Length: 288
Image 1 (cartoon, rainbow, N blue to C red):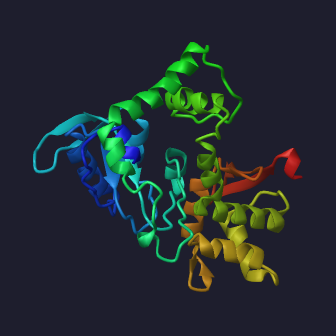
Image 2 (image 1 turned 180 degrees about the vertical axis):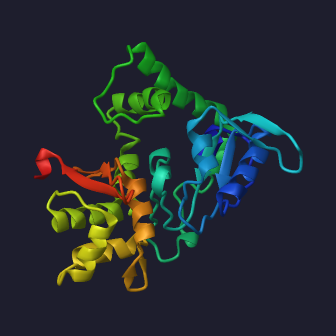
């Protein structure tokens, strides 16, 4: 139904790419056709933040090597990206690039559900121009009304969409269409697990500086280290029962500058002799 507002033709579903390399080849090949819609159907994994997919959603163009040819091409990305799957969620950087829609038929067998208007798809196809014009009329009316702005969280990288689509709907006293974006960002598994580690480090070091060696010693010597051990296990910093300081150091480096629940990880110094980084967590006043 959503795709009909962008394209009148039936869609050809695409498999969701397994990795970044496959994603680059698939997107470039498809975008060379300048399609109005790209549809990833029946995803069985989460919506992973492949580099080229993230770039295609936030950038106006995408450049890559053409499959089977020794040349590169630059393609436009003015395309509607759609995806569906059972209990699929965007993760990582895809959380701010995706508007999640949760559909629950509340029936044991949704495939046998009886709709009030079983011919709705055919109806919209026959009168697509009318329905598309209705959507555009909302935006036009908002512009003619002087573009009134409702107070809401900024959605960086999508300013034009937020202005034309988000603000026009909120002007009609409808719900913020980006509300699910912010809730999904807050519920992102990576963010949740990182927050658990941050809270464990706050309890362990009471706001003082620490190194990966300090964390390792704390876990090995502390009688009650579950508040720190379990979150670090969940983010992959352990080899069996022992903490992997190399992985831990890599993980901390990647999380410098992150702020979760008012707790921010900072790099405060690097030991001149051991070259070991020293970190510290700062806590905003409303969290103290």
